[in-house]
Image (tube, rainbow, N blue to C red; front, top):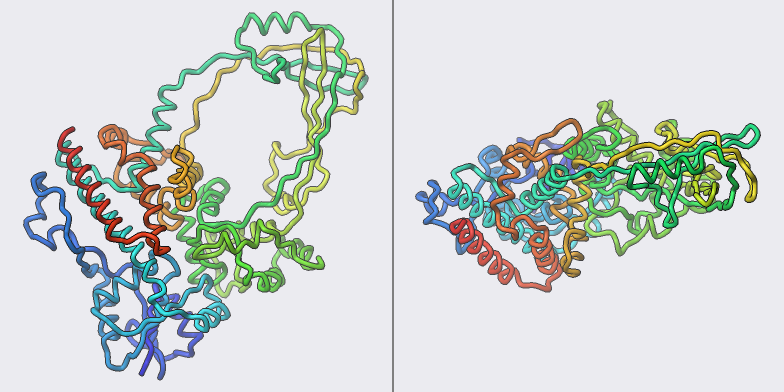
Length: 594
């Protein structure tokens, strides 16, 4: 009897086939005497549409809502039906005795496999391959540690509840509010509160009333040393809120001698960056490369699947598990290209690699560990985008082990006739990990030493000027800052338990946030303007008419708390779905009453 290994993508299937020694090729599969390796192409099976339950539901009518099927059916996605039918044929074949689920290790990967398994009406025993890297060693290790599929039943229940709840809420809310307002208004559990964040920021900017303020800057001299200081009040604030007061202070101190009354130096430590999870990689590539979140994800997937250069990218962890530690030194040894090699060699000369709790932390690794290089060498040419993203990952991996950046910040107060002027300077003591990013050094990180003066020194005031300024509105969201807001949606929530639920998930998951941003853009709710994301009139209008529960992150927090409890076996999935049915009924009622 043969074993069917079902991967999520053809490239992953080929990697597993290589490890298992399968070399014979069929149409949509690879095989040997013992194994058949085949694959999905992402999702092959999806939830049925309303008209699949009742043809009359194809037409949108308010009287048919809410649509709440007692049991959610599955159907094949037309574009990939050929591969799905092949999988069913292999699954039910008498030649196959058991199945290995080798889809991506996580909630969505579990759902992809289980939907195929259920749709095919298969009842053969299943083992689960759970890996976070596609190196031969990782695949062999995973095959040796497989568990029975039943141990992941709760994860599947959580994934199924997420999919069915999203379908029920999105479909019913979209139909109800579209019919009520006679305009196609697509909605969703994650996309609507994400859009609400953008609309709220838009209103903040539109409603912002700039306020005038003045700064007073004095120029001081002692012998050949010259420096500037900004006037501060007793609370340390450097703004003066009336022109008259600013001019009066400037006139008061003009031409008078000053004295250095305070001189303090404080050592600062700038710790190295933590390893990347997907969201942080997307933020970094948006800030440094101008890449969209989706472009970063697509490029990282190629580095993972096609080139095997990085570990699984769709991760929400910035830590490594203890079992990865022995692989870190060989990975550093594999980094031979410049400018990385010099830094890798610096680390390899240490008696022990510094792997503190900011790097190795089993408690903070969920389905997958942080994104790191695999130690493999590129076997083919990388595109410019692949090179750029791989560069960010290589630098981040090496930097995580390098010493902190240490510098001194010196604050000097110069006093003229009881008015205090503050001067700040900084001086590097140990560049540490920042040397790896020296090519990106900006004025903000340059040394800015202050003159070598002592407390009690008298100085000459050579000039005093006032500068009129205005307070600035909040900045529009970029993809980098929107990803941060989605990840940290809990900060918009007061309830501590929901805040905690959102802390572990936020709005969407690292794997879905990029697609969600693209979706609200393609739906006409948001526009890209250079790096900024700006809501359209359609997007602003939608947020003005949906009920608060649909636009607030608390709702997602409650869902994620429930889904997490289902995955851990603490909550019955039927109770969760009953609450979703009640919520859908409420949304339809709200739409009808608006």
